[in-house]
Length: 394
Image (tube, rainbow, N blue to C red):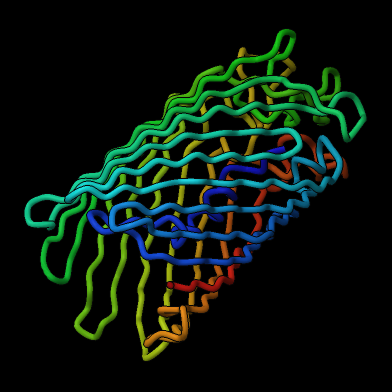
């Protein structure tokens, strides 16, 4: 079962060191090895990640990236309508960047596999420098095909295909060097998801195991459950603003604002601020992030009765909630003047504490203990996100 999207966001947002490409210049040859960990809400995700990048001649760079998640879950959703589980997900990416003049062309293929979810994605991109290399235009397109399965009966080892999803991602960005101390960038992204169910199945874009809650007929203080019903399509748009300001004492401030909306009625805003300070062989980083969103049109914590509407969901990711993240990072650079075949290297550690607060998603486990349905406490939890990695340039 694929774990919640907000966890994937936090884990992958910390992996940008593995995917940075500088326009009009081939990426450096390097190798990165990382251990990552997410723990919060009775859910643990951990595992290794490896990146290898090698240049071929002066115009081509190839890379291979593998990322593994070992997942143990006894989250609130599992406690209500399932049993704790363990599983693993492995993602592999093979890509190439080709430099011609001031243009960089990129292509990659990603394959992700777990016991009940398989996904493959093809990505193409273009980056173009102009106006004396002060401006950079980027464009990209990704096409993904996912196959979702679910357990058959009570056998934990047997699965059957339930639905498939086609995902299309279109994005464009523009970055401008304003002064010797400041840069500013804009980005726009559109994502379309279209799900198709197997005959006799109703699951499409939703988790095939998750259930919505409704008042039990004749006993309105007791919750009963049925499988969620989602639309077959979803379109989302995101607009972002990012910038850097470099300070006289070699420090730097990075800031970001992102706004999001989709066809399900969700509206979200994200604000992030990071301060970076190099001192001798060390680089220190402090960061702060605030995120908030409104609920989807078809979300409710508690419906009045089963089948009340055409679409019904109780996924907390679709509720009204906010999160605050505070974190730090520290890097130590070694072999700055080279050491054998190594040009330079760095040891890195990063930690974030993320607090989630839900405005209309209640802790339904309290209902089992006798608290009337709809009066339980609003759900909240903290999560720890850590990563440790070594990077070697050669």
